[in-house]
Image 1 (cartoon, rainbow, N blue to C red):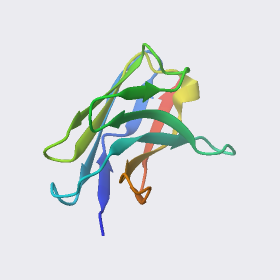
Image 2 (image 1 turned 120 degrees about the horizontal axis):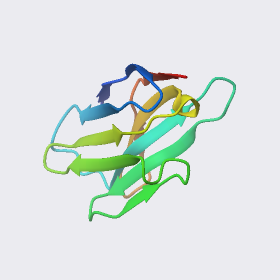
Image 3 (image 1 turned 45 degrees about the vertical axis):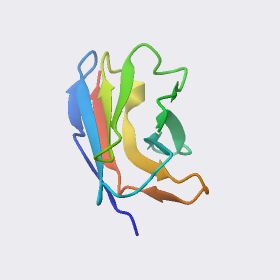
Length: 116
C-alpha cells in the first residue's frame, strides 16, 4: 500500500511563489502518472498538473505559464513550483499517483492560501 506525503503549502501574498513536494513511501513503486489536484471551498476537486513516467506533462489552462510540475522518477517524488500565485489558486492541494492499471493513491492534502 503506497503512501503519499505532501509538504510545502502555506500562506502567501498574491504574486508570490510556493513549491509543493510529494514523496511516495517507497522508491520501488512503478507509478505511471504522478500529479497534483486541488479543491477550493465549495468546489469539486480539479486537476492542476500531471506528469507521466515517460515525461509527458499536462496542465490545467488556469495554471499554464505559472506552474511547473517536475518529477524524480527514481525516487518517486513529484514537485509543483507555483509562481505568480493568485487568490483563486487557494485550496487544498492533493498529490496523486496512479499505476498503469488505474489503481491510484492520494495524499492527505496540503493547504495553499493566497491573500490578495
